[in-house]
Length: 315
Image (cartoon, rainbow, N blue to C red; front, top):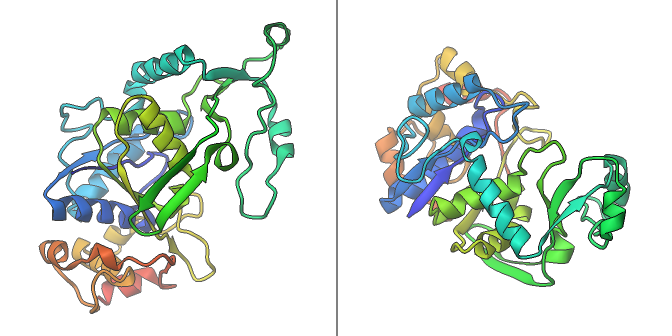
């Protein structure tokens, strides 16, 4: 097994990040596999080295060690996306040779106007620029983004928590962006190239990315790699149903540490709230690795206590 934890260094690690990292670590360690740490920093405006350094410090404090990564190297490096741009260029060239890559000149306003047919659904691109002639493209006065034209095909897979999934690509994702108009590589391209080239066999991540999986599987396989097995896990949410996130200032690991929490209490709290252990107690990390049952993960999101610090310290 080769698993990976792939955070974006756009803020300090919060409890929701730690939950996913913990589950990634458990999955790989229980299988005796290799855990890869990859910094997904293609968002150049928001990604910062100080956040990447802080993420690694927090993971080390939690005891969630990795086998390959930015600080350790390995056979599949580099482990920071900004150092992998030449590899993404190679993937774009492969898509170009296959006749699947085309420029898109749609404005943000037009894309927003496409809308989604039902509440909670993602907007799917309508293919407006796919049929443009060479003359029409030459007349455009703006830099395009680049989209990949998906086939009229369905992708199916069995998720480790949410079971069988099937998506008809033109309806599920449509032609999606692989390079933005500002020249930055899109997440869908970068993550697919990285998982394929790094030989990742198992991907565990938040359920918010479940809807992206079919297009990533298709792209990984088109580029000639076997698709990983996927497990999408429930999110941590507050009492009002809002997911813990950097933007919503979910409680950080740094603040928990500074407030007197210890790593075993933090991880034991997560294990109990997530249903991985049946008794609320403080377990050493080594015991958590033995006790936690990943098959017990439920599909419902996990509500954390209003006073998280107090709840963790009470474990």
